[in-house]
Image 1 (cartoon, rainbow, N blue to C red):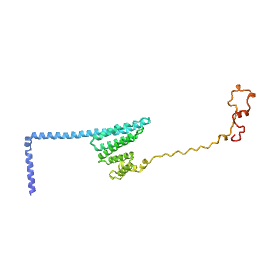
Image 2: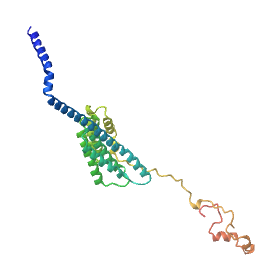
Image 3: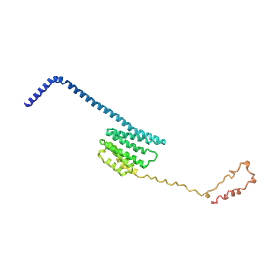
Image 4: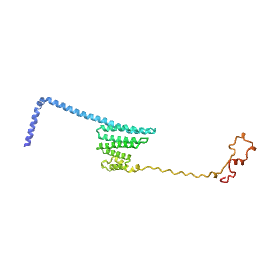
Length: 283
């Protein structure tokens, strides 16, 4: 009974409010219009902000895509220059600078992490593509910059297991290139054993790296080629001497002396110090 009475009172109040609504609206018309204007302005600003944010995000993604696609293009140009004997590996350094700047400016942690990973890869590739010798100090400094870039990417990739795995794997590669193989192996073990990184490409790469690391640590030693066996040649004194034409180097027939003036055959052999008995070895 009380609930019915309460419902009836509420109904009466609503009916009374609707009855006096036109009078209230007319009396407060200015306030209502001002409130509506404020609602429209606030709503318009909100939707405009969302629109501009989407536009900025699209431009940012487009810029990032261009930076990423620049790396394989530069690689192809470097390899083409190598075939001509030219070294333009430095072409990877500017994209590395641009990727670092992009990572600093973007608020998107995923894109920032990937940009830092690609920057580290560019720094490492630049060293590998050089034709000339690189000093140990320069290698150490540049690989350390790459390792720092991977570490920063790891911090910003907390929401992406695949990017985390890629950053950790990159740190392992840097340790290898610095000669710290024990540290590299431990990093690969951690990646392989982490359930959070299951089914990531970097985890599969880390497992494979553990299996093949011994090949990269060992020094390659080339065995000397076996000596070529040359058949023994008989001594010169053992070879038979065969003379077919004794007059090979004599002057033309017109210039030849008369037969009576020619020396005897025995005299010719004596002058040439050739024994007359050709069948006895050693002369």
